[in-house]
Length: 323
Length: 130
Image (cartoon, rainbow over all chains, first blue to last red):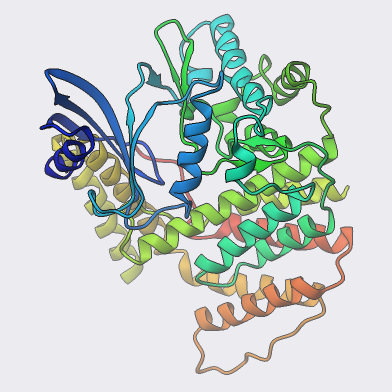
């Protein structure tokens, strides 16, 4: 990759660029993350390239991601500065974005780390205040209304349709469990009254923290879209991801939702939230099945297996919802 | 039994990859991929002895689920393998759920059958052994 990045960046900056240290990061299931240092005009720049892999757990559009990153640079939500985009794969064989590497560390399990309880709760508040900030953005003023699809009140129906279309594209064998979930979701579509920017995969692992535990960047905007903010709330309160999002007894979903509602001023519809929590696991199952298919096709190096654990939880959620 | 031999060989393969190879891999990405491969080999080792019993139980459970949504499948041809019969039943179940009249009771009953299947599924994730 050194030669490819050197040639690309040389063309972009108009003078010779040399690539020093480079390493493929172990994190990131949907994109290849290449960390590297590039030098031109006597100055070294810390950069990260996010390149499409041959196969992934997600099929997303780089144009959407770049539109969101571009818009958010003009907002209070901290994001990495987008330097260059190769949508065709001309330089790196596959579509690729190059961004500044932001100071800070990615700590997916920070809320259950060895920090004190008070420190962990403070970190949780800082992290999820960023989610509230995303939902509080004036997306029309940022120009996102011209670049992203506006769901116009039917965000739940569109989300269900989107993930069902993805399922149809990757499904290798019958999945009656997901047929049952799809029926339930379709029969209980909530009404959406608020449209915001939705991150789509908000979690501590998609946030960088500095040495003082301040958020320096919110990462991974490839599934961002305009939709119902309950979608992100359902994602972060999903019981399957409790190890990432909760501090037992001190930062429970109710605490998160209460702080989010107070900060955003948006009323929480608890029936809708339950619907989005079930949609979150439907989506996760489809993502895993996408990984299963890509691995079977020899396009993905990380092994994925049938998401039976997710099916088990989905059934618990459906049975509880019907009581 | 041949299943025991398969389990023993796969467990041994996972052990040598973990004990001999893993700590020599410098790339974080390659180490992560290898760790995933070792975990999968262990899953396959455990599944090898459970597969036949799982197929038998799942044929019965899927027939019960089909009855709940008013569907049946004629699949008693002895030349068809249990795996193929199961795939046919699950395809019929998926199609039937899409159009069946579902009640809270039938959703609960189907959910319970699917939970039982997930618990028996031979390739399920299991606690790791280091």
